[in-house]
Every structure is written in structure tokens, then in C-alpha cells.
Image 1: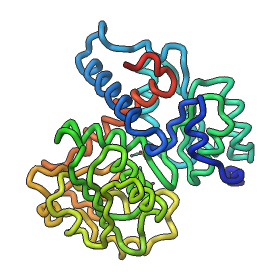
Image 2: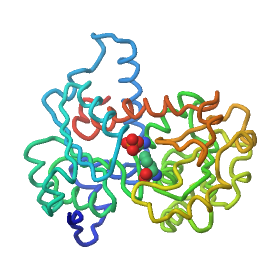
Image 3: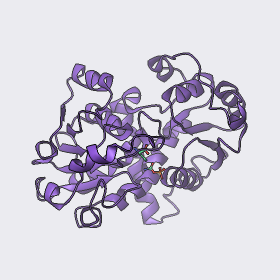
Length: 328
Ligand code: CP
Ligand code: NVA
């Protein structure tokens, strides 16, 4: 099967400032709108949990539809987006690369043009960021980043929501990352700048986050520090985060296991954080690799709330993208 075709480089800032409300990355949405989205997500979570049919905004997306394109596997993103749009009265359609014409070489641009005639927003999970930008460049409806090799912004919205539910405002708190400098680490850097917290990234020197993202954070005056030492990052932190050693599409990097073993979040590492620190992980997890069972299944772990909050935070994203006039 041919790979999804990639077009020449596109200007992500220009795409983000178009009239269509794309949710491409946290740094492109900006702190005011990110807060608006989280507030809307929180309100909808409260209404959903109260099971009050009078307050539940179940028709906000009435008659609207979301298409979701998956070039990589997914459990949480797929189910939480589908439930979110349906709980708001809309509809969801899933397209997988291999079972759609994308897998037979139809261009991303043509797919964007066609889907824009059928649906009101498109979520894409893909490998290269360029495919996401290409989709946004040719879609007439909002495009949502459901994970690329570079970032995972929807996950970060759920992560910030979860941290704040457990520990209050994330502003000025200390978040410690221990692991690969991967797509999640990059979105944590964006989040540190947009939500104004201190981020300490413990990563092996062989697996750093993208240099341009660290440069961007420094230029913004964000409190982002990179170290090879997990203890240095975790000491006194309010939250410890990690992620898989091998991300989707990384199969050739089996040496990651050797490089990342010292970055495993176990009880010893966790004990260096604040006594009330929370442990977070976007999931799926590999117990015994990046995190011990004792930590992920222990009292400081908030990973199930984090997974649930994908649903609530994404309701905010969907509303912002498709019907922002109904948000506040
Ligand atoms: N965290 C996350 O995005 O999970 P999935 O890969 O299952 O969607
Ligand atoms: N870094 C992981 C995140 C999965 C949600 C991956 O890309 O596979």
C-alpha cells in the first residue's frame, strides 16, 4: 500500500489564523482559547455527572458530524471522540487508512475537499505532522490533531483538566517528565508555555524533544528545563509523568529499552516528588517498562481519571471548533 502522500511544507501559523477553527496544536490555539475550552469541558462534565436532563447540553451539536481518520491504532481517542460528539447530539464516522481510498493513494488534499462536503469537522491521527497541515490547508471545516509523531494536544487538554481536578490550578506548579522526548513530551512543552507551569524534562541525551520546540519555549520565557537526570527533575515535583518507551511507528528503535530503563517511574523515583504528587500517563502503559505496577496502580496514580477526561475535554474542543457561539 502506498503511504499517504505529503505536499510541500505549509505555514502552520497561517493555517491556525484562518477563519476555520482548527485545533492543530496548543501553541497555535493560545492560552485564552485553551482556558475557554477547558472551562466548557468542565461545565459539560459537571452537567453530565449530575444527570440533569434540564442542564445537559445534549443538543449543542445536533445535526453535526465528525469524521475521524486513523492512520495509527487508537482506543481512547477513537472511543472518547465518538462518545463526546454523540453525547452532544452529533454523529461520528470513522475512516481507517487501509480501508479507505487514502490507503490506495487518494491525496490528503482531495480527501479534505470531499469530507468537507459531508461533515462539520475532521479529526486526524497520523504519522507526519505535514499530513495534518495538508488536511487543514484543504479542508473547509475544522481539523483536529488526534496525535502525530510530533504532538498530542488533545491528550494534554485532558491532562491539565485532570491535574487541576486533583491539585488545583496548574499555574506555577512543577511537572516532571521522565522518559522519551516524544510527541507527548513536546505537547507538555507547549502546555508549560500556555498554562504557565514549570516543566522539567528528564530525557536521555539520545532521545531529546525537538530542539525547535525547546527553543520556542525559551524564547517565550517558559520555565522548561531539560536534564538527563530523573532524580533532578522529579525532586519536589507536583506531578510525575511518563509515556511508552516505543511510540507507534518507532519499532526500529528497540535500543530505547536500554536508554530508557533508568527513567522508569518506580516507587523510589516517585518518593522524590512531593508527598501529594500525582502520577500521570496518557496510556496505553507497559507495566514494568516505563512505570512499575506499584506506581500506576497505586494511590498517587490518576491515570483512569486522565483517560476519562479525554471525553470531557474533547467536548470542549468539539464545541470550540464546530459551534463556539454556543460555548460560554
Ligand atoms: N492516549 C491515547 O491517545 O490513547 P489511544 O492511543 O488509545 O487513543
Ligand atoms: N507516545 C505514544 C502516545 C500514545 C497515545 C505514541 O505515539 O505511541
